[in-house]
Amino acid sequence: MEIPSGNYLRAWRKEIGLTQLELSALCGISQSVIAKVEREHVDARASTLRKIITALKRHESPDGAHVVDDIMTSELYEIHQNTTLQDAIHTMVSQGVSQLPVIEQTEFLGAISEQDLINTSLPSTSLVREIMNRNPPTIEVGLGMGEVKRRFERNDALWVVDGHRLVGLVTRIDFIRTMIGEQHH
Image (tube, rainbow, N blue to C red):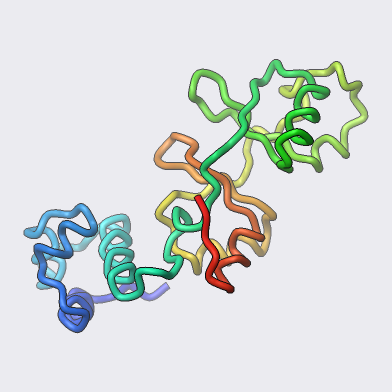
């Protein structure tokens, strides 16, 4: 990934008609930090650059999908690790979902998918904790669409986190919808 220079970011900001103060409001970074980044007086953190670039892209093309937050599903049906497999199956079928996050006291412990259920030989009275994936693929909520696309080369679905908090799920079909301009939350 090529990192844009401060000069490039300043030119881009001016080209789309934003002041530093307006950009500051859009990306949640102080105007003084934006000025330092543009003058290349600081080596900005990747998260700072990501926020600036996302704000510039959103201003330039407000209807497009720019980060995973734009396309993820945020309404999740969660289960607990002591839920029976039968109850997990019932939740998946009744809610029309193929994956469920396993949550205990707001902590994201893992996930269970249709594939996990298909692959198990355990009885339906067994508990989710016995077959759940304790290390499902996760991505940060502000990740750009190019990186999301790359991650789908190896994963069918990606759990979306904001720091350590689970905030959504994005699947390949969510990504494909962006090709025709449909987004949902």
